[in-house]
Length: 162
Image 1 (cartoon, rainbow, N blue to C red):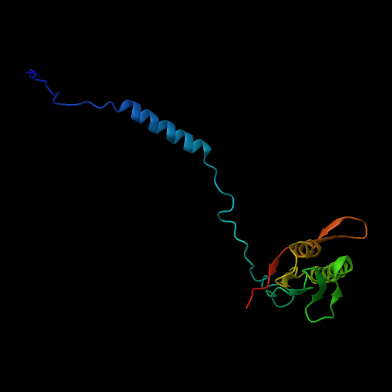
Image 2: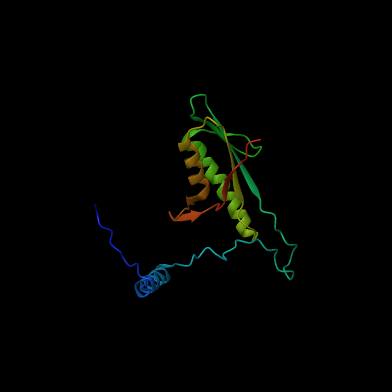
């Protein structure tokens, strides 16, 4: 028959807190050293009205240039149209005409000390992606007569579907 031993259980178990505190301080130091404050916080792009002392009335309304892209059944670009004007052809010639028209409107806005117009693209659903990217590239910048790249429209958005 096995014998029973009396085992004494210690009354109090001591927990050594020193290593735990060391680890906590090391973690705090690590997170404080690696934390990077976001530069976006507090950077608000506000459109405030012009100063009351300006010569004319405040023009806070930004002109919108509607670019309409129509597609062929196979997804190729059929034509480019700005607003209600006559459509340009498709392909490189249509994009060149688009860039010329947008550059003219941007130049007029800058000479009148107004904000650069915004571009709103209304594309057919089956239009190929490369044509949309080409449109954005052609309305965003162009090369002037001296061969320097000049920015055009800085805000390009898509027309919401109804």
